[in-house]
Length: 196
Image (cartoon, rainbow, N blue to C red):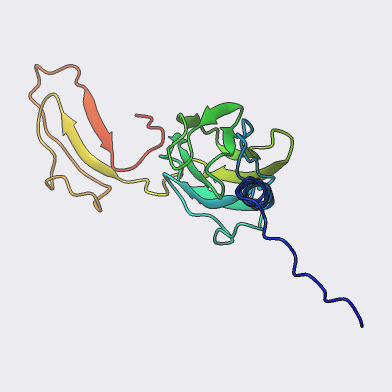
């Protein structure tokens, strides 16, 4: 007659605990637990999410992938600031060589009449990836006045006839015989030079 197969003996309590402990260690290992990480994640993102000027406007309108812009300001604008915002909070930004916090305004940048180049360099948190944005700011020349009229005209002696008016160019004046000289004071309505 064939012999009867005996059922396997149950695991001892010690073996069961050892098996559970092994499975737990494997589970911790597979999900990254059980150890400490001393490194911090870095990014290679070196783009800007925003860029604005304190005077003038960017052309074309800002887009993260566009790196070259132009802007125009009037002659009365002698300086401006640039406010860049990094896409990645770990990135660093320099404007014309000076460090600027993301979302903050740079130091004032002096503008000469004509073209002025402003560079914004973004360095990713990995420390090696960079991207440069360039803004060419054009400051207009001083406007020359075409107004060649006077706003005032007076004499040190006598009086004008007719009374002064900006559009009137011919006057007469009468003085006493005792007046041997006089002065003429004229004020330009616009800018320019004046000869009397």
